[in-house]
Length: 473
Image (cartoon, rainbow, N blue to C red; front, side):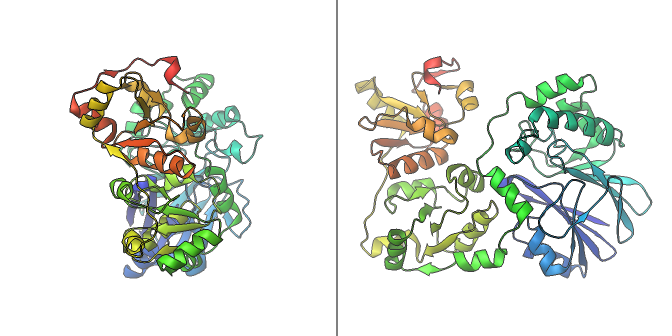
């Protein structure tokens, strides 16, 4: 028997490869399925099942392509009714895989079809739990997402189901069972997830706040729902894609990998409603970029920020990337449902410059330069685009908190005619913020190099943890 976690950091997502006697089950696969297929082929094994723990909101699953290419049966738990053929497993049903078994545990709460899969080894011992978004390391799945698809599923109703599922299905299991969740720290599907991506169930019973046996159902609801922020807008759209189906990843790649000369790229930008997405590092983007393009760096939390900043998953996209990373960008967009990349700039931004096309740039200052500016102009405006929670923890005195994830509301606070200095934690989010607003006609925004981390290290500014009501949205 072999169990392997296949973890994707940018989505904080765990897929799983389970093999026994030449038969394989893949749990919660990503959109690009070739790595799973090649792995099974290398082992001389056949993919028998695609096990889905629920209809995912934060990424588009590869279940359809994996089934089409391998003949594997797609398995969901009770209450799942997608628009394609599946095996709708019953609670308690046993699935055979080689000489091991997988028991279906219906655990509604995160969603109504949420299901965990309990692995039983060759000797009949319960060894591992593939817990999806029901149980994380340090947390549980948030119960407020399904209502974005079905309004009658209130967060209170779902939280009550989650309490029952945890108490009746999960907590009675043995302490030495290994928990393999669908997500870790950084995912928007929970709020207190650990950086660890696996643990024993016994340790979770002792340390996970949501498994505290002293919690009544009403108190559990309160603590699980407390502090939840609005999920990214693309979540309900990804759920619908996972339920209704989508284009093959092969078609998406074919469509997105059209190499365009600077002239053809410019024509496509002018003749379509395509958004120009520049995935280079923030510091490279600042020095020069195609006017009206936005920067979301591929080396940061790319997919979640794309999903937050681009509201329409059917938006046509033209890519500017580092050379050699075009396919990677198309795949990572497709992971969260952005399937309509229509081409990329061949030769990257250098080709655009060499063709003598129009170029824009973003002004930047170091913290030392900012300190001098504030000395001569104490009324300089500084915008902190970090999350409310980060701002509340510590921030510069007399700054305005304009969080990137609420950019439309934040934009309303900014006077276009005045210069504003912008920072996040390290420079990634501030460049997204400035690039989007610059494309909307805000030309007086200056990026602070290195963000709040560099500001603190400079030692030239007063840091406060006091939150003034006037500095919050």
